[in-house]
Length: 82
Image (cartoon, rainbow, N blue to C red; front, side):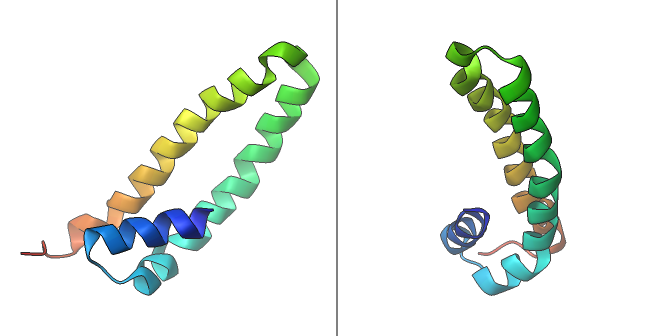
């Protein structure tokens, strides 16, 4: 889904999805592998069953903010599309 997000955002912004994936995919994937196993481990071991979906949704807000930041981080280096 990281690739789908970055590719679709690149297409909607009018830039090359292949270039966007080459610049940002590995960093996003590495961060994903670092953060989500820990969060899920804490979620499954500490959070009561009825609140697990809610806690993942709260963590997901932060994750989506990170992906949006990563998506827009290198746009400052590129000239604006007119």
